[in-house]
Amino acid sequence: MDHASQLAGQRVVVTGACGIIGRWLAEAFGKAGARLCLTDMRAEDLAGLQSEPWYTAGSFVHAADLRDAGSIEGLAEAIGAQWGSADVLINNAGVYPSGFLLDIDATEWDRIFDINLRAPYLLTAAVARQMVKAGVRGNVINISSGAARKMRRSVAPYCISKTALDRLTQGFALELAEYGIRVNALEPGFVAGSTVSELTEAHVKSVLASIPAGRGATAEDVGNAALFLASPASAYITGASLPVSGGNSIGSLVVHQDKKHAL
View 1 (cartoon, rainbow, N blue to C red):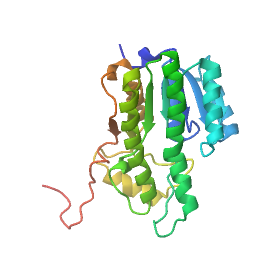
View 2: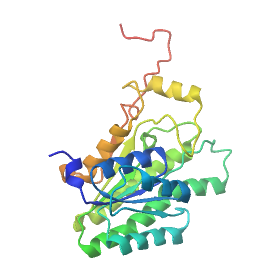
View 3: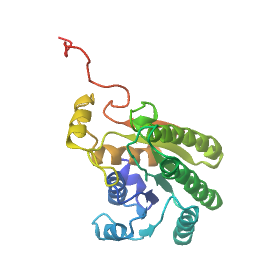
């Protein structure tokens, strides 16, 4: 039995559903027959997802601003009202702004950490309470990044937020294990484009050339990994961070010498 077939009818929440990776995740679980709660702050784009062929019966959308604790609480209440509890929560929403530590101000720092770290904390806590109350042995998947362990110049706050997200993943995994709730992080590889952070063609070309597998991440790469983490096939995995990056999180093919090849 494949991972997807085991998730039919599951209630799956995806934050940042209008972004590239968010849509990939929504499509993967929708095609698997899961019921979806898709959330994003862009209400108009969110409504458009309802016309997608993979948008399943029993699904719903809910606009929410993840910088606002009240909005997060409202999202959790909507999940509870619609389903009682989710089976799977995917904390995907995130921002990847560029800025040197000496240049960004406290407001930008707070925005990065509000979305990348505080929101997953608040929403996971709220949804986990519903799971516990309903007796659901659920799953939480935090979308992290290889940047959690490989510092990048000019995006240090992002890297730091993802390192903290990995530790939050472990903390929740420890505390929710007694309720049968698993918590893991998934680290997608490089995606050449973003709806919130524009990348230049030169930057994309440079990054792709440095990835050991020789390409960026695809919808299938990310979707299949998330389906695996949400399925019974990974029943003994919790507190883990799974890189799906073609080796980009462990090293680079860039060689800083004249001799560029081994042979």
